[in-house]
Image (cartoon, rainbow, N blue to C red; front, side, top):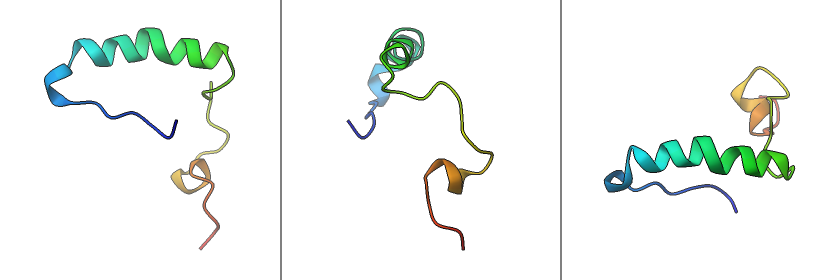
Length: 50
């Protein structure tokens, strides 16, 4: 899975479900990060330095 597509007609309840239910479950399975490893967006996306 590369990401999530969220349709506007499903908001806001679906966003709440994703944040409260899906993300913690993915984190407990080790699939989704629990904290950032660095401080810049470039590092978060694992891009090479300029």
